[in-house]
Image (cartoon, rainbow, N blue to C red):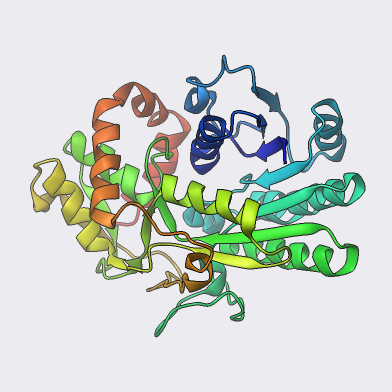
Length: 335
């Protein structure tokens, strides 16, 4: 493993991963391949743009010729795929882009991996397991996605398994819980709540707020992906999370406490269609490789809040234009 193509590397988790890998492995070269949709942002990578081992290629993973050109020109031996449409609410509004990117785009990357003999890693989601009423999801459990986003990611996972079995493509998958940390686009719950609270704007909380999520700090997730890339068994899936669930309303309350804001800013809004009440991951398989999260939920959230407080230059410009129209449709019309 020497030359990595990090697709979707200008997004939230991908940019944190690129920075982490460049810092840890002085012999590795990373090529970020990103379409730069609304959630892709080169400012996420501006602190590494002068690194001689980093390159950026603007491209769409659905464009087979563009992917192959990047693989050839940069002598790529490994693809790590973060590229995806990821926001459940947007998938409910319009699923088309999710099917194109998360399913067809995965197919294009797998074809490139097959053609050039590449190592392939997919960054997946715990949402493919669906609502977990009791216990915790294990990697071999049935996939029961309940949103168009989750279904598109499940489709990609199944394609990967098929290419491993049929074509012997060297694949692994990680299925991550909810990530928090720097550079997350402020449509997701935590950065939305943090940036709203900074400006004393109500925090739109779905339903009763008792939905349960496993919130993990993004660098813990990056370390897990790194470990699976190097020590994971080919053809296998690994869950990634803290193993601890938190009610969304408790997350909102802690955000407000960290910012010294009143809980009266919490505003309950009509719940999301088909909203899963609980996700829970069994992460024993990953822990058997020697991984443990370095951050508790509370520590990760505190670090996340601190970053948004100190980096208004990054997020203020994002909460305008198209974002304002999305926010109006998503929250202001469902009160």
